[in-house]
Length: 425
Image (cartoon, rainbow, N blue to C red; front, side):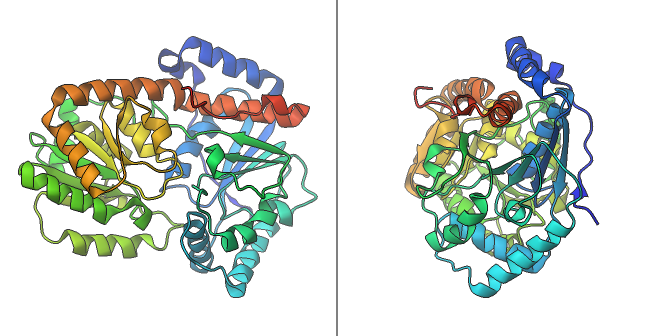
């Protein structure tokens, strides 16, 4: 059977004009017109849970409205495959793991099954992250321009894991990274694009909702909307440091006894480690009526996350490694200041206007206390962060960058390849 297609509702570019600006939408339509009817395929490992699965519905839907024939499919891996790819993910972020011969064989065996399910030709194929990365090497005769999109922070990549992945990546025509620092020095590839991820300002997770609805939602999940709330929204993953977030909360609570903490995570099909980490964090949290752990299986979906973010005084993103961290831009878009780890793509999002960058629990505690005690500071940082997201981290900018890369590949014009957000911004 073919790779599973993800069915999506239609989207309209024009609906984004009041937020992104008429000029941004006009530029997209101008870039898209020469690409009209081009067949585009996005492939990743899961249709829910994690940032990639949140980006692709909007990116694919807006490509369609711009006139491209775009679709999104997922690779149907099993537990053995995802155990290998989770190890690969951790290794690429610097964990001291080894992808031994048996794991490599299991990865390639499942990847070859994906190859057998390939059924069509496309003008542009975008393969997201390590799980389906072997596809191009296994389909060397397939037509079109092939792009590998890496959403992972590779600054301290485990070289054994990268050494296994690199030949697969070099089979592609182009690669996309979030930041220049993530590009490995030994990578040899035709075109190299730097494209930060984005959020959809009109999605259920980010659209404006009534404050009364937000308060009623958090109350339903055990949070008092009239007391201060700290929040982290992330997968239950050691790189997100959920125990460190709890430590920050406990220190803050000694100074501000009314404070509450919510940890919200989504369980994804390609993350077999998630439940183990969740249970470990649940034990670490112990019994505390002011601390709640919630997942999508508790009924916390996009609207509920939106409500929690809007009801928070401070959003934490205490990551130890982070490819980008979409939840930072989500919070900033809602005008909520963020206290976050100085890692990966987080500083790019915060800039100097959206919150505080921290390197340890002590700094995170101090920053959280400062913000909880100063409503004016929270407001000014929140407003600055929202404007930064509007300028640089909305879906329209992401779409524009993809269209520019497609044009560069089609016309062999390397000067058109997007090179990210300059340090001057």
